[in-house]
Image (cartoon, helix red, strand yellow):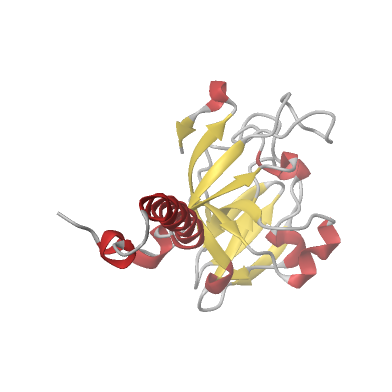
Length: 199
């Protein structure tokens, strides 16, 4: 059974048909990679210690705990089918005010505050609508002792924080992000091999 490429190239000599078949196959493979990267999944590297120990960055970076940066895959489709939930780890484009942090490119943080929440920090503990938030992902010694006054999040606003609170430049510095800034949820760590796993 002949495919569309065979029908297009049937009048060409055999060697040209073979070359055309290879060129079309390679072009389709490249297009598939770009489409998957643009709409389905995308790889990222963890550049800082803000999510330690959930995700590692490499020494000699400040407060980094590993020999190599974790590399993660973000699921770009997930947020097309559901709203972000508290506790989700999200890759997103930071607001302009994040320039104060000195980092460039996409950020990786955890969703702490949802639209309509009133969020505050008291001596390192987070409160949502006046109730202390249970945060089992924050390890011993990872909290800061900061505080900020209650603030109510608007529609489509999300408060993002790193798990390594004492060393995270996050929504406490540059404010909440809008839903439109989110790229995807972190699906897995794919490198180094010793850290491979779904999150």
